[in-house]
Image (tube, rainbow, N blue to C red):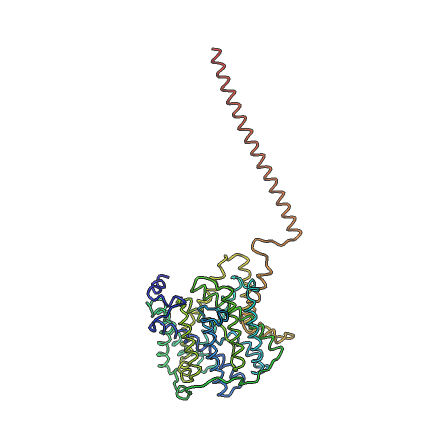
Length: 499
């Protein structure tokens, strides 16, 4: 904490929402946000493109839209439209892995045009959720949001390990070279972030990734050929695909959007609590949800994917406590430029996955700890432990057992909604348990409970009577002692008179 305070005194602009930091301070902390999230922005687009058998041109287009919409959403969060669409909080948003499992299921079963229709409906659901958030916020107290944030952090651990190992499905997955690069990157980031000073400490992830790339070059992991073949400028197309509405797909994604909104609330809470020592207000959360919904609706007509907050960047925000809005606006500018200039996008995609995984794994741990921090705000009572433990058990348990909701008689939509992400079952279970269990100290109103309460009341009355009797006896004894003392004194005086 002392190091953070020293950094705050040296560079106050970085640690305030307003003010313009110097380029020397701004560039490293901005680029580390870009580099830690860039692969997360483009990877879902690449996966969906492969799943739906896109051409190379279509794959480039969906990546382009992902980058541009990530920029738009992040800018809305920093500079709310009309003061209401956007949170005004330190958060980086963009195309997210949170939607990927459900999108894979819908894409496989119905195709990409149906996925876009469901995305359009889901965006509208997100906007309504944001508009009515003050009326439903009672569903998301710190106990629920803390549990969800904890689950988000733990759920991201396999993602970091897959990145360090080289990327699932790649020829060298799990090889020694990947782990060497990933662990060296982790060690450098850890050293810079904990033992560095000033801008080296604040930009520890960025500088660590640069060192990781240099190490990766020696292993032949960096391929610059894609830069030469990439174009210089391209604009996204309007309605590149037909939009099809399917009731089952729309219902599925409507539920998924609601649960991802809970994740967004959790990420906002973690970022705000960890960097500003307060929870976000109703208006800030409502604005964030509206922006996310609006951008998702725009994405559907551009043939792209929806956006949400990036968990790894929440960890960076909490670790560095850098909250200046221009840091995030700068990241948005880089995303937009990469989307409009394919050559720049190709440069950023050169960073190998082991480097990204090694740089972000400790960040995911920070997210988990912030979930715990929010969870214990009101005390880790037996009731809170029950809600937390059962919810996490269901969430992580179902997610880790592949096919647990795909047996005979189980509807496909059940697995689509609950079996593809730990966050959804955890969030729903936490909300249900928090409203079913009686408040701390309250007991169920049953005949046996009432009889026990009555007997306890009688016992307390008897104790009170006994205590009153004891008090009366003590008073009587004191009076008797006083009378005896007077009698003894009078008798002595009478004897003196006789003499």
